[in-house]
Length: 431
Image (cartoon, rainbow, N blue to C red; front, side):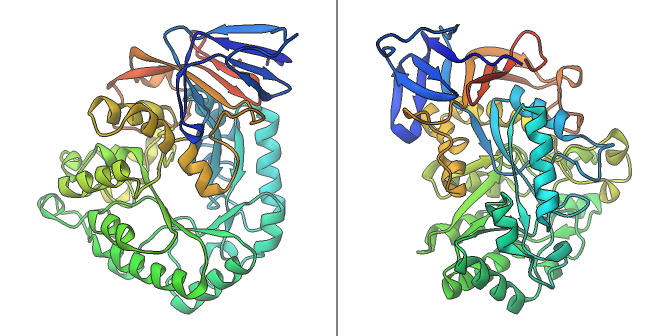
């Protein structure tokens, strides 16, 4: 791994939504931080120069949900493999949900994940602590100890907290200590162990359905409890149009994200029982997809994430309801977001904001920006380069994605984390 003390990135088009920069500008880096924008300081000498001619220079991507499968499921992936894939995708910071094995409900597990990530060196990993012990939804976790161990936000991962009184206690406690709660809105009773959107496609395929109301009922409850407790909450992985409307109409300072694939896929993609489209929450109707896209466009949804869930091949080979849900998404987060620009939904600056400044703001961290003094977490990509997603070129150990074989426009050429080059195109291996 290269450790240059000083770097200049020249001839690139700098897009930094947090600082409202969208113009050709050079960047100069020293000691892992942005030293200057535009002209170099007097006496500055770059030990390394990166010519970014024809490329976009933007903050490193911040991903609010990426499962690394370690500890506990190393047969699916490892911290080393997935953070390398993140670097290839231009991601410099990612959040690891707490449903590891063991669960991230003790400082020891949180610290172990951070230590392994730092040893790999490809990406900053922020563990998300569990809201309840063992994610069982019954006893509150040691929230303050987890926060002190580096878990700046807490979540119950994919397990809804079914007891409303316990959720109230959790949010009261979190609010007391200024902890943001990441909530995946789902009523477990309405879910009823479904695996597809409750609609005509699921009925035709004979698949048990999950109604959109499973999400919207939970959102109504969570909003009421957020108002009661003054806890800052963030809604994870929205899937329905009604959910977007409820959040848009709320006066509370809540935030929300959506998985990139939800902006392109619908229940129709399940035809043929394509298990790579088995996700939770499920792919919903065309109108839901359009409402999600509008929510991203108007800022109701401030963040697009990968919702990365790598699986081994066998996990997707059972009958559809028995397959493991989830898509391997680290390497398609940027290209799918750029596709929204090609389709006229977002400006390039707004698109970059949804995967940099937006998620960093949710975390309350000074990341996802390139102001002077900021950490030199940088993504360079060629906005015109066309490429095809193939399994042999993926660095993630999980190849479970319905986008295999798809052609994308916009390819990462360099990724820098704290001024260190962690990925460079053409080698397809991290530096």
